[in-house]
View 1 (cartoon, protein in one colour):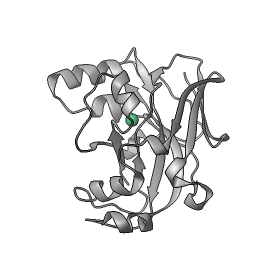
View 2 (cartoon, rainbow, N blue to C red):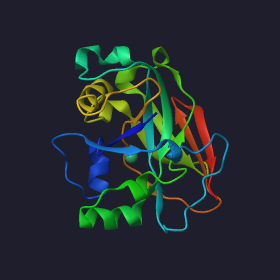
View 3 (tube, rainbow, N blue to C red):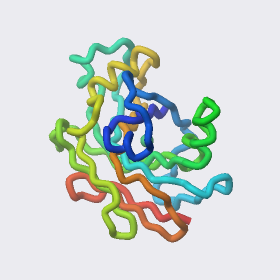
Length: 202
Ligand code: ZN
């Protein structure tokens, strides 16, 4: 399986990182080895002093597809989840400056938290409310209504480049409020006030 991530999909997050608003979605990949095994803590890697959480809505692909038309994109997923795209921001900034690929800062071991998936019928896809709490304090408060590229547009766009396969997961981008994690932090992700994942930082 592969993990496809969308960058810069929320206007206010683009501002907070002083990035430019892209004309097309920014795409990068994580590896299957990036997945943090369920119930494992996230261990801050030795190569970074500034690992950030980014809470994101996840979409699980349910069948093979390429060149998917936007109007049929909804047939390619049944389940919605929530996760974290952990990012070694210090390393990413250096790579960005040099125009180098981001993988070392985005696809390292444990960098993909994948919470539980629920049937998409459980949600109003146009307006999914999701939150990240750090040590019980609300740090990110998002709504899919603010996505620059909606789920169906993302699936159509991504499938022009990569064949989507059953089990692939799309990280749809993070809203504003990203920040650093420290040893001892506890991160809880919620959709519509229901807990979807909990991660201890070590
Ligand atoms: Zn992200």
